[in-house]
Each structure stands twice: as structure tokens, then as C-alpha cells.
Image (cartoon, rainbow, N blue to C red; front, side, top):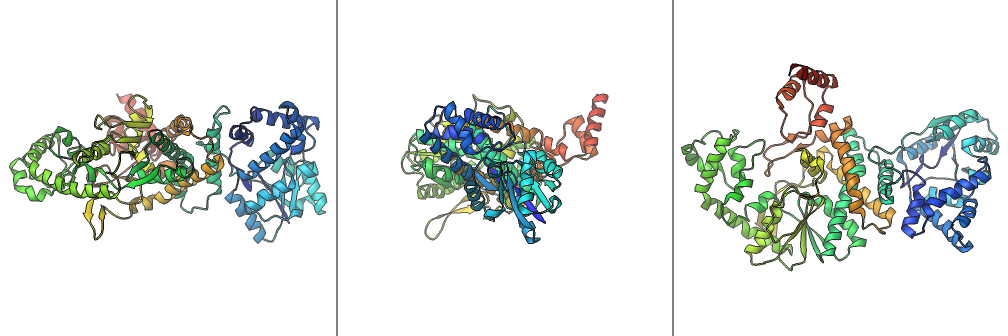
Length: 632
């Protein structure tokens, strides 16, 4: 049996969803006016000349392009070589296609490669060899040489004649239903449709999209199709979403941070843990070629590690974070925020009516009483703050944060609380300077007046409708999750200041699939930089912003069942000390649906409802919704 394989979109994949986009890319990258428009028109004219009955060559195409663009013969020769170079450079193997090929070899089949293509043999051989396809010169059948095409059946006839075998001794695999399957079958071959190369819903775009948007979508599809096999379906989903949705988001944000820092002559950019971990890794990739003067640093901090040490008096502003009304709100949770244990104050707590169990939920009245109790023990709290501040200052000095004025910080969002705390520490230590913060998004500003706070995706003036939903923030923060625990505080080691992490490995997140999220984001970033050649991508942050909003809306408002299962399973810690965890989404049973539609009762206030409903029985959701509506 001769097993033949189509090449493009079966074994090899371009970094563009549509092949024609390569010509737009060449025009953009090399500044060749009208190339993207006229290159396809020249090919059409060349095919018309042959009445669409025979294949054209790249030389035939450029004969028409020479006239259309008024090119010299020398320019034509250079452009032909340039197109061949970019064509080969933009290709990557499709894993499932390669697996089919390897299996066919193991089974002892003869192998052939068939392609409707205007390119020459040497170019196609180079493309196959560079992407790990074992091809012999005699096993390659190209329409550009044989003139017949798969699309009219003549190329299949040429293969039958060249091999001297019966048609039913050939089994062909390809991605085009008409050319690879129906025409092969009409010629008597066995054929199978290869249907794994489609762009997913995040990778689709309009014809008028900017070439960098098209490149990003094509790169995402290419990376996704070339990935190594992932046995766990949840992890596979996480990787795919990370490549197609999260990857472009993180890349654009990281690029924006570097670009804006460069404009401000900031040479030391500190990415705050834990949200800054993956952003800093992407920033390092970008910075190598585009912003070599900026030092990307990772600073181990947290709300717990900064807010308490930055406090010098117990004023109303401090109570915002000390008594922040999280879903679970107990004495243990609140006392931990100020570095104390409620057990040490049992007697005093009992006197003010707070002698219940330390893990019991506190109501609003208890919250008011606790506020006054903390005022009465403010000296204890401020003493702890001062002790922790000494170690924090030593750590910041060790990391170079207190030296010089050309520094900025990067965080996901949302109000600048950590920036304010860092700026306070700088001021306390007599380093009077402003501190610029770069953020994914800004919901309100808590920074000191002298400190600039800049947002990429949205800020107080540039709103995004998505952010009105409470669950958006924890899910977006999941996109930036780190592989280590949160920072508790700092301690003096033998030689330097050490960071006291809640745990070294974020096993909860790693078990969920964090490794695949990080890998997907980094794989996208690396390939996008390779394909763009880091040329002229300064507009990426602005170009990607609206596209990110479109894909986020798709993800949040209409998740697939696989996405709802994968991301809904993540357990989020709302409290800064990770005192409890809640799933981002879980299905509702019949009685829970009644409670929800009647009384608005959710599993927790940050729940991703759209995903929760996808995880619930659809008939239950529809029935209860209609029933409650009729009864109201």
C-alpha cells in the first residue's frame, strides 16, 4: 500500500490562518507597497492564462507581478527568493499529521507526498527536512512540476502512472474535502480527511484586521497544532486557551510595560509577585532584542508582606484592608492580617462580646466592634509593623530597589495598594522619589499623589464592560498565577535576607494545570517573536487590546464545556492569607437553581456564573428560570 500525504495543513502549518496573509506580512515587514494586494492578483492572472487546468510556477506568477508593480528583473529575482525564504521560515510541523506519518512507516507502507503548490522542489524539500519529515526525492509529487493538480484529479493520475500501481493501492490523507478526498476517490484512491487544522474561535479574524492580529492568530494556531501530546483533557484545554487567548494578552501587556518604561527612561522594572511571575518571563523574551537597557527584576512581595510593614499609624485607610469583608470573615482571618493571634487577646475580646469561636463568621456589627478593639491594641499592631518593616527594608535594599530613581513596578491591578505601600517605605527610609506603576487594569487609585499609575487594558477613564462582573478579576488573576506560594514576610539568613513563602511550590495550582498555562503563554511569546522577527511591533499593545476584549468576552460569557470544567475547577484564595479556597465555578443542582433564581443565592460572590450554568443540567436551568419567571 502506498500512503500519500498532503503537505500544507496536514503535515506542515503556516504561522497564518490563511495562506494569503503571508503576502500581507511580506509587504508589512519589508515595506513593499501593494505587494499584499497584487501578489494574489498576479497568481490569479497566471492561473487564468492556463484556464485553471494546469498548475502555475512561482516564476509564472512573478511574470505578471513584474508588470503590475513595474518591477525590474533583478527585483523580481530577489522577491522570489524572499518569498521562498519567508514561506519556509513560517512553517512548523503539525503533531497529529506527523503521528499519522510515523504510524504509516511503522506499518511498513510506502510513503509519498503530494501537494498542489507553485513552489519548486528544492524549496519544498527544504521545508520538509527542516521540520522533521523524512522525504526521499523520488517520493515527492508536486503540481508545479507535474502540472496536474489534485483539484482536478490529474496529479493523482500522475502518481498512479509514476508508481505503476492500481488506484486502490493508494491511500491518501489530506485536509481539503474536495481536493484531497472527493477528487482522490473519483480517481479510485482510498482517501481520508485530515480535519485537525481548523482555527479555534479565538483564532478567527476579519479580512480587514491588522497583519499583526492575523499573525498572532496564526501563531496561536500553529503552536497549538504543533504541541506535544497532553494526555489529560483538562490540561490540554488549559494549554490551548493559554496559547490562543492568554498568550496574546500577556504578550501585549508585557510589551506595553517595557515600551512605556523605556519612554520614561526607567531601566529597572520590578515585576511584583505573584502575578508578575509569568509577565516577567515574557518580558525577558521581549527585552532581549527590543529593550536591552531595561533590567527585568522579580520582587517577592504580597499584600501581607507590604501592607502591615508600611503602616505607621492605625488610621481609617488601614482598616480598609485589615477589615476587608471577604466571603469568609473570622477572628483568625483578620488577626492574621495584622500579624497577631486572637488567642492572646481572648479575655479582651470576650469583654467586647467577641468571645465566640475564632473561626466563626463575623457579621457587620462584630466588624464594627472589632475595629474599635484594634484601636485599643494599636500599639501592639504598630510594634509588629515596625519589626517587619526593618526586614522588608533590608530585602528591598538587597534587591536594589532603594538605589537610584529610575525604577518602576508592574502588577496586574487593581488599585495600587502595593505601590502605595512600597512608596511609603521609600519615604520612611528618606528616599523621596516618585514610583511609577504599570498595570493590566485599574479600578480605583490608592497610590500616593506623586506616584503615576498607568493602565494598559483599562483604567478609570477607559472602561471595559467586562470588568463590571465580579468574577472577572479572580479569573484574570488566574491567568497570571505563579508556581510558588505567597510571601508571608522576610527573615535574616546566614548571608542575606530570605523570603518566607507560604509554600515553595504552588502544588494546588500545579495540580490544576499551571505548568501547561505557563508553557502555553511562553510558547506563544517565543513563536510570535520568531515569526515577527521583532520588527515593527511597537503597536502591538494597542492593536491587541480590542482583540483581547473580544476573546475575553467569548471566554467569559460563552465558555465551552471543556473550558468551564477546566477553569471552574480552579480553587481561588480570596483572602490575602489563603485562609480558605473556593472553586471559580461549579454546577448547580435543582434546589440550588431555585435559590439562585428566586433569591440570587450563589455558591460565593465571585463565582463565574456563566461557567457554573454550563456545568449545570441545561434542562434544569431552563425549567427553573421559566418557572420562577412565571411565578413572579
